[in-house]
Length: 127
Image (cartoon, rainbow, N blue to C red; front, side, top):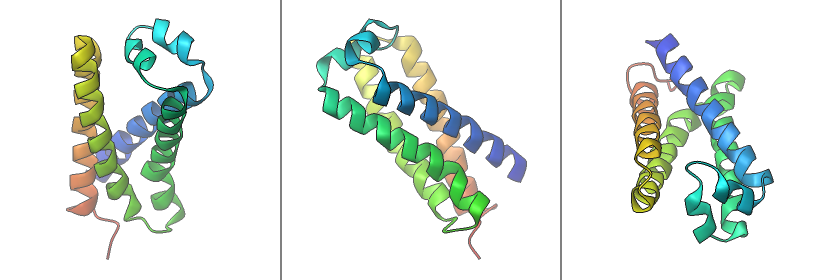
């Protein structure tokens, strides 16, 4: 189970890092033209960049605390935060009618719930 949790956390971190870098450094107009990116036209560039930085921090929070053994409780805390982020993403993409993106968000949400449950519970870094 520990291996499965590491794999899920690694996948989520990869998704978070890629999305964060994209939202932080790619112009909003270019993102709005991309598949699944129509929602970016409705938000400010500052909001988009803030979201991107939060996703980069989430990528770090899913991996680094456990690897460095510094506050490893932050891994499941970050996973819970990712769940909240995915709930917002699901609502946003449903409003845009982007069904495929919603399915991806539900997948990421499920992985984050698994990581949070596993790291708070049976495979906890705490104790």
